[in-house]
Length: 353
Length: 287
Image 1 (cartoon, one colour):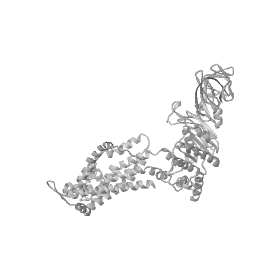
Image 2 (tube, chains in turn brown, yellow):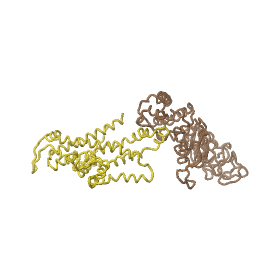
Image 3 (cartoon, helix red, strand yellow):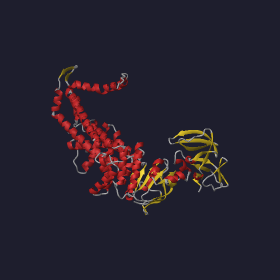
Image 4 (cartoon, chains in turn brown, cyan):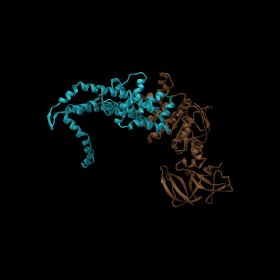
């Protein structure tokens, strides 16, 4: 159990990083509370696995320090940091039984057999592996193997943090959901700090209390799933999270009012008078058809089950909106309006606050 | 369910069948032909049934050669497999030394077999060779042309020098193919180096080792060229292995019938032992 602080960490895979692009991680500061469930979310190559390996101790940061419970752990090995990690591809010891796999980390730490037995059986029950403990681990399916990887982390009572590196990549879709809820349930039961790396927003948003969104080696926003949805602080968060992503329209601001192609729009905050590259962002969930507002042409309607995704065009810009099942959709010319509470202005990608 | 038969398919198999027939089946059949007949000059043959087989299987000479062969193969496998594995484990995984090591390891494999024999013949000569002089210089009386033990020592050393690389390179390829995640997981699980070897590297190398042992078994069981050049099967018959004995019988004494029978027995022994080993290794997999 530990509170983890990543303090101004930079990391490069080059011995002598030159340009900005040589850095896999650019100045990251992150605090993980004891017992929290965190997700590192971002597209491939954004540095999330690098950050995970830095926390687990498989990598040493080029610059910056990492603290576990206030103690400097930057130079400590994964074993000294007392962490557990579940990898993208299931890692199991093929020649051992499931029981021996789960017992392996405890036996390596020279625990007595009686205690090993008790811990292994307890964890096996939690993971629903208790009926097949004597089977060879190599015969299991991918999700069974991932459960064992997870179990090897859970058997140790003193683990500071359990890390997951895209653990559901090789799992069949219908089992993904099961394993994900199992994870959530386990987190509630044992209350260990968990850090979960993924590029799948559904996984991140359902698993974590706090989601850390990353892009190009930087943290773009840290927040609860609701915060990320309602107040994306960066346009990247806006379109990476949510499907479809946030609408972004070029705009300008004159005397505290935002104008999209000459049309005034009410927004949450719009103090800034000038500045380059201003954009107005609003999620399709907060756009609706109205009697008056922005005149648009309806170009496309896609059915997504409980709602329909409507694509419209205004002055060369696409505006998407969601319309609930059963509601009428005008064809051809129409007007749309934005919910001012959920319409933000972004300057150079960052939200104006 | 109705299967559709398309006999044109045989046309595609035909080239392989013809090739195998000419390079394996037909030569083998001529050997079978010789093994059951008594042959004289002018292509005169008499049926002799199983006579040659009985003679070979009951001959002390064959028993002695077979025993020498089994002993040699056992010694060579017992040294080359662990040594090759150890070398593979010690080789660097990345960096500029990788290619240096690979080239060095591949060198013995690139030398023609009779050259290997000739090299060691000279290298181990007690009065001229570096190795021979060295061993005598440190106080051991060593002369592989006179002492059976010295001859065995030289033959085994030569084979280890020649073929350990093969085992090492195969194992190295197997080791490199193990994903990093296994080592990282082992580190996190607190596994010590021995446990990493025992529970990760060795199981992952199982197939590669099976192939390496199989190859080394078959090759060492058929060893001929190097030993003939080095010792000629001597001193006396001390290093006369099966293949050398066979050639002596077939080409030295022109006993075509017994030699043909021996060839078939020899072939069946290799086939049986290879099958047995492979089946045992693969059976363990399933349980």
